[in-house]
View (cartoon, one colour):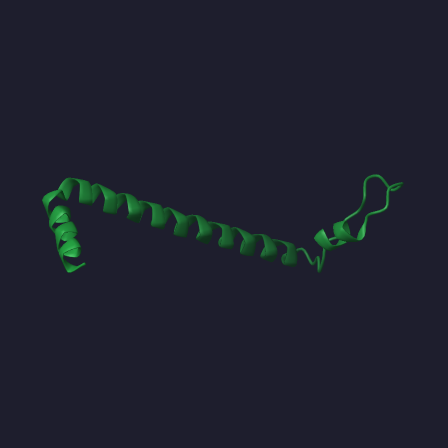
Amino acid sequence: MLELLLNSIKILFRKKGRTFLTLSGIMVGVASVIIISSVSICGGTALTNEISSLGVGGLMITQKNEGVPLCENELNAV
């Protein structure tokens, strides 16, 4: 097991270009996920603040076709 670990570390140092590209790709991927989640959280917060500033305590949802009642699952989803 120790020999396998030492061999893999030796290969990483031997192939520096490939190691650098792999690590930079991982860092860019992780950074993009963090940035996207931060933007979505900020967007949700901004939307909530905007609705609150209008004085709307809640939203009213109306049904377009009044002839068809909503079932219990649809009401729970809303």
